[in-house]
Amino acid sequence: MYALIGVSIVLVSIAAAEFVSTNTLRMHIHPQLSISILGASQIVPANIGIDQNLWRNHSLDHYGVNGGSPILTKDSSGIIHVESNTVRNFTLHEFLAIWGQSVDQNQVVGNPVQPGESACILVNGVAIQPTIDVGFADKENITLAITNAPQCSATS
Picture 1: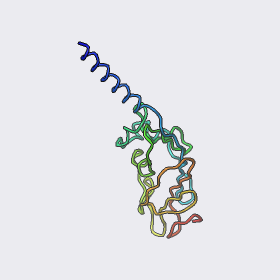
Picture 2: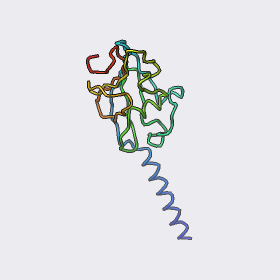
Picture 3: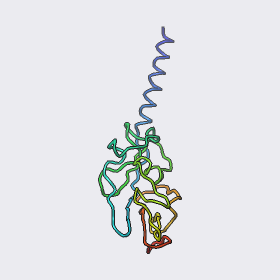
Picture 4: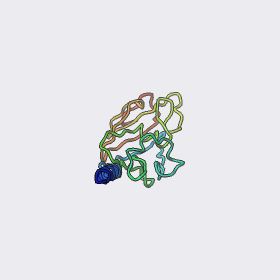
């Protein structure tokens, strides 16, 4: 009888510890995302990773807190909230997958790249190719862009 009680206490303790572990916020950073299509700003929608219409990919949900996505937007300011129960490197392409969008040489979040234009990602003003993933850092400024230049640069 005492053995059964002891085993029950251990099992309940393990379950409680697991519940607390998966619902404890261990990482909270705020990169800033902007979208510029030929110089015109586009809005990053509110509630990406919250609204089911803006939460297409659930592969990272186990990193979220209280059943939420670990990467989300709360308003249309472009601030991305990384709120995770695990400290790990979350990326731009993971956020875009949650949103159901992507960026590559042919399009930027559904906007096609025409001949003579280029798609790029600017990270704190430094241009990189859209196929390169960007790890999020707190207060980092990321811009997804289509420019009129055949090559992407911070000034194009």
